[in-house]
Image 1 (cartoon, rainbow, N blue to C red):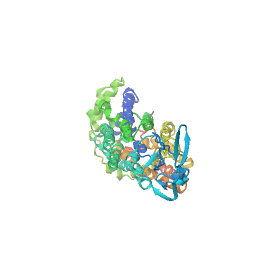
Image 2 (tube, rainbow, N blue to C red; image 1 turned 135 degrees about the horizontal axis):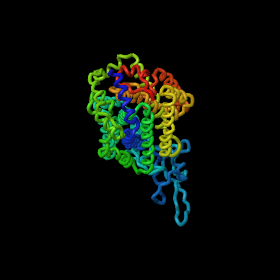
Image 3 (tube, helix red, strand yellow; image 1 turned 90 degrees about the vertical axis):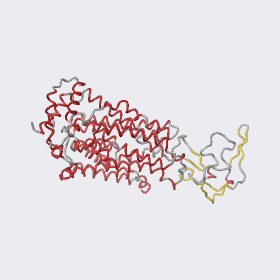
Image 4 (tube, rainbow, N blue to C red; image 1 turned 135 degrees about the vertical axis):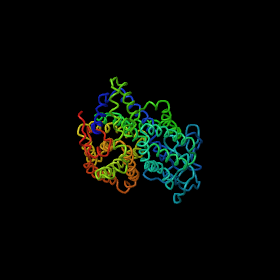
Length: 524
């Protein structure tokens, strides 16, 4: 039997054993449950680095008579603090010169307030103490004393550090291709929880916090791609989009849960402790997850692959002839065992495909993170905004599932970009984000699939970093970010036309199969 026939035989075997049976459903749900636990703490930095509303504490004017609550905008404040856009300046106040204060009779007590004569409005000075408005949540600004414009960069640095750490995503891809999807997935997930807990316990200095933020971003960034690949390789071609949908829905749910935790947490340390605790429980149930059979075959671990196939058949209630497993033995001398990562770059078609994937990832993350980061700066309740922006991904994920199976990956991705370019519609970008994940995993061979996915994801972080600068451009011209978003989306929509269609194709196991992927359709 030829190698090509054997590969088709494996996909056929997967169908015969129940392409979406009890085994696959239970294991994919377990994978996404672990992913859910990890994603809860993914955007902690957005909340602990929020810029609080505050103003100068004005000596001789506050709490007269003394009370447990200091009003944020008392009547006399307009005499004591400069205003901008109807809001008191955060760090500046007028010089207090005393003078005659106003006295009012309230109930049975006299209340003394500062008056316009109490301040020299021609002399503005910096203050050292502050009065805070709104929720009592204590973030790093209040704990580490990060106030005023000259320290604003210290509150935006954690977001940038997150994306810098994600540039090392290819490392997780290499480890996954080298040592297996399961081991790396569980190790990264558990380590993320540990590092976040250490950050909450020991980050009593700003730079220690930044160190832990960088470390956990390096570890965490590989969790999603590895979970996605592991799930994809566990199920058959006709259920790939459905599996991807559950993976993406997990991320949405985790983000929304974080919004609720941040809403009720009293300080940033409590928020991190709660949000990062679930991954620590992986030790008790993570071992149930199976290794990818495709990876086992690609690494010539035939016996383990046969045992895994037998287990799937048993759980799914399918009779499986063990003699069939021997047919995989001929893969021992398959050329896939001798293919190297550098061999990908010997094919002009593969080089073109990798470059196109990098471009599409950069643009989709550019807009995606622009939407996420902007959710905590727009008008209204920051927690509610964040939850809404997270949940709006649900229709985007569902649309990606429906259209990717209905009209194909290529058309879905290209149309998503073009619609977004015309309307700057975030919903379309969410659909593109899901589709590019599926597309990238299906385009490249098993031995290098995780590495390429990680490289494209890491390269896409350039777009994420650029997204953090869009508010500055909006200050120049409010429409400028949307014009840039639209122009980038047009470019991405055109670039996607170079991709082959992968709907109903088998996952390629060799470079040759990947190059000719459109010829490997499966009858479904």
